[in-house]
Image 1 (cartoon, helix red, strand yellow):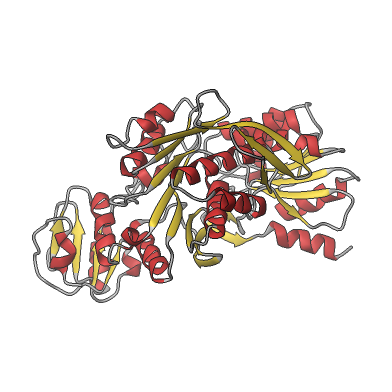
Image 2: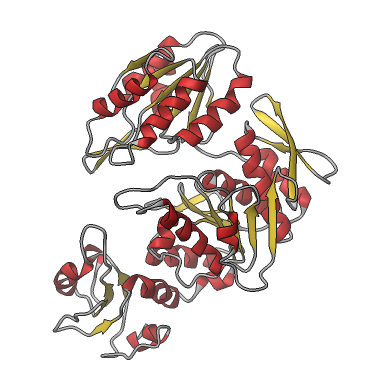
Length: 477
């Protein structure tokens, strides 16, 4: 694509009409003919890598002033804001060829996105999904997850592949960081779904305050033609206030006044029945707990807002499964083993309280806490485990630059004498220890890793799969 055509989307003058063969915002990915977009970063500025990009063959550079010499260069005040429309233009605006549905919230985005994908598939649509677990065309993984919401170049490249693959609908998890860093700039969503908001992702390299966090979430709804929101959540008015004038709104919740109102949730084994006001029969939800029923209620509301047939909604919810979310391992044992991504106090409380009615014995919670993250998470998880579990095994999660033993010590201090607990810093050995403790009727809940297949220490990710560890343990019996 000629540089002049690429820049036309931003109405910028073209310094030299060179042929652009690729876009890159990482100089290590630059090849001959690429346009290098120098992005500002939390730790370093892309300006520092312009010379490297030119050495690798960049045909042009887009950056904030000052402009480099010796290469066609274009100045913009905000390269991040420019990159989204540039990527969309380069890949032929694939989002416009499909129906895009955005899901945002502190908790439940991944589960709700999977529910929506299952429903849309049952409705006969070819559905793509982009989120925490990667990008999928139908059930096929086509791009691994680097961020919950990819950077613009990867996002529009993936959307192009989905459109060419016959997708009619795409369900996308949109994070607050994505909005802050303008990853979905210029993307128009047919509908946006707001689940909930609670203090999280606040700290170094994330959000400076809860107010900023809420504002970034709310900004998504400026890009949505229809909004669906949790009426009971205190942050919903902030989301709604960002809507375009006249945009349709549909609310959900268990409170009076919700357009789609949940009445009750009845446990059925490790599944549940969700009763919705005005519906002819309950919805079977293939996952346990009120929090999963709340996600299902949100999915039902969004589907009603965009006109999906109710029979497809029922079929999708009855059969949906999500890797690493209340996922049962088929253990040949008289106790239950569950894997879940719960990694803060709110998700611990929701999960463990939901599991309690299903467990005749003890709940043994195995968990750690991520390093270089707000320390309050550790205290919140410890308190939730002390309230709803019967025993705990403390171990590593993603310690990053911190000492996992020190993280565990902080959690142990917060638990105190509330429940029995041991510390086994190596997660594989900790899983073995938890399983050795289990008795008939118990539930061993492996918390925090979920779908992740790595442990990150000092910037290095080593392969680690809880599913594989469980297979190893039970394979030796």
